Image (cartoon, rainbow over all chains, first blue to last red; front, side, top):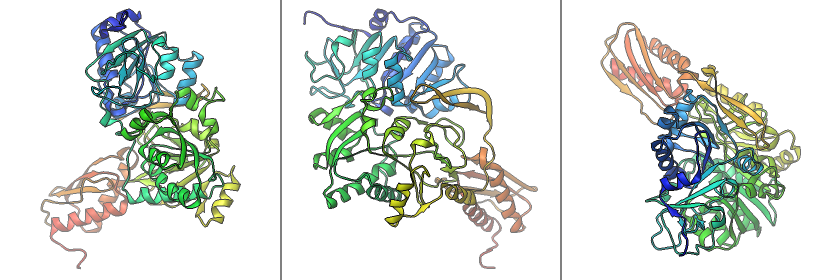
Length: 473
Length: 91
């Protein structure tokens, strides 16, 4: 090779021209197994950087070491889709001076593309990369250590950041094709011991449930889909990460086979369930912004019809060509739904941040039919409430709520309510569900919120939707 | 009524572990995953259940994982039966 971009992490940072106060970005394709954020921020701290804005596509439990970097002033601002674990707990209690800015995946893509979220230096982990920076989430040699599949959330960063550093734990011979990130967008390549632990990708939100209540909810959700009027040849579908919404795919599959119906595509976070249906010929194409497990990551590496898309192509509200505009049905989970069908997937009923917006508002708003699946109660915590703790997905985009106590249909969609009733499903008023929850758990005391704003929720169009206040113990 | 140390319940989600020990008056120490919203109600249910069983002097430690009131009453009653040796279900 006459030219190489391979340098040490420190050299890459110096070469990037990064200065105090600038914005650095990361993707979260390794989810709970991510090693890039902690590695890079520790190096930045060691080099004496201060006042940085960390703009990640999402953050999880594994990023608790950021707490110390926030306390020492290395990181003073965060933008993300979600927060979990100790970092989320500390931030909810007022760790940061500036509120965290939360965006959906589509909203983040739009904000990066429009320049509203300007990235100075992107640090992007890749499962394979050549010396010039052609990078992929797929394994390309027998030395491959970590596989994440789609790099969809990293692609806007690679395209729009002023300076791009790819970190990889498998430097392969040029040309590393097919590529996700182009060498033309990459300034430096850094070889590290590990970019992520692939075995932890399906940790966090994703569970394959054996819980009988989840299975009941999944069966109900499948019945809603089958009788909704949208279950016909060529339909398209996306599922969220909740146990019940993943399990619903199994029951839809049975009906697809029985009725001879095929889906044109499945969208979003792609799971082993979706890969199975695709390989059986039941789903034509997989459009993958994030591979949710090992099976999905392996599929995208070998299957031409399993296509990677960027966050912008997936769910941007600004781009009419984004895939969510062609989506028929989405099944989503929720922490809370209120009587106006508003959904919260970010802040727990204890007022502590414990989730991620993900593609929830993007898919709910643009799909033809959005179905929220959640139990009426989780322990003593109600999931159907008079008013959500934090507004994430406005009710106008939410069509059906499936609980084990009945199915509520948004009054704006009377035709769907009629179809479900005609199919013998138990359609109830959402106010009755909220009242049923209260009758079991009693009237909760108000949460001890303080006056400090710790989080700002942006809607997918770039407007402020809600504020999250600190919680006082 | 004489009270011995006794315990009932588990630390599973949706359950509550209730420990009873001798004490002066009714003292309830609660740790709960839903304390902010339901701590007051949970303490009231524990106190009422014990008083209903004629126990006015005991020290109670409860570790709650989001149990419903019916579960709380059942666990408190079981712990009280073990603490007093008086089988309320039999009587």
